[in-house]
Structures are given as structure tokens and as C-alpha cells.
Length: 229
Image (cartoon, rainbow, N blue to C red):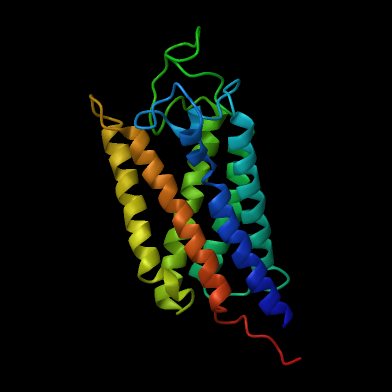
């Protein structure tokens, strides 16, 4: 197997693993927790001093490392893909990894209404902008959205990653709708199941990363063909 093929397979496996590790939050359904999945945010699962936070943090760090290593493999020593959208998608994947590891290492300190003595603060998709965690979370979401959109454009324009053209686009649409749900409902009064919306959003990101990883493995993108051995 050529070096380019090895890099493609390794990168694809790592991208898929990044998606799987990013879904460590599903473990919340396997042990008791005072947090309501319909209304709580995923950042509350790994808040400082929360039970099992090491598991969630470990999952995020593993996802980050997989994403960053995959991005390096796909870009160096020479890109495995051609075209600005594809290169942008891979670079955004690396940025997602860096932002996610920073996010995991800067948790919120406590949860209002759950942890005694925790000051009441606005909760939502853009809470407490003075917190480092809010900044890193925003950067991580922006990065993965950039990767998803750019990779989808590349799949249609440059004919790479064919699985993303239809199936990936459907998953991306679900993620976008869940994000709109969060952004709109966060500014309205009442109970709009923001926790459910975020879990659909992040779950969709996991599925999309696995699809992207498989697409990288199953068909080398244009420009990844190697010299004969």
C-alpha cells in the first residue's frame, strides 16, 4: 500500500474515532444524575466537581487528539486533497480539535440551581461570555460547522468524499435545524427543551464525522493518488 493510501486510511480512522469519542455524553444515560437531559447543557456534565466528569473530559480530549492528528496526516507533507473547500475542511478539523481540548480543560465552575452556592447566571447557547469555557465552546462549534460546510462543498464541487453529497448533507441539515432551534429558543421565554436540541446537534456532528471518516477511507480524494511502487 502506498504512503498516500496509508495516510488516507489512518486519517479516515482517526476522523471516525474523533466522532465516536465526541459522543461520550451518551454515557449520562447509564448512571444516575440530577441533570435533566431535556434541559441541561452538555457543558454541565463535565462541570468542575461533577461525578464522572473525568470520563467526559477524557472523551473530549481523545476526540481532540484524533481530529488534530488526522488533520496533520491529511495536510503534511503534502495535502491529500485538492481545492480550497477541501483544504479548508481539513484545517477546520484541526481547529476543532484544538478548540475542543481547550474546552475540556476549562470547564464551568458550577451549575446554578444544582450546586449549592452557585450564583444564578443566564444559561443558554451563549452564556457568560466572560468565561473562557464559553469562548472555547463557541470556537469548537464554529470550527466543526466550517469543516462540515466546506467538506460538503468539496464533495459536490471537487467530487471527493461522495458519501457527504447526500447522506452527509442530510445529517448537516439536521445539525443546522437543531442549532437554529437552540439559537431561537434560547432568546424566548418558556421551556423549549434546549438540552434535547443540543444533544441532537452534537449527536449529528458525531454521525457526520463518522461518515466523513468512512468516506476518506473508502475513496481517496483527488490528488491523493500516489506514484507507482
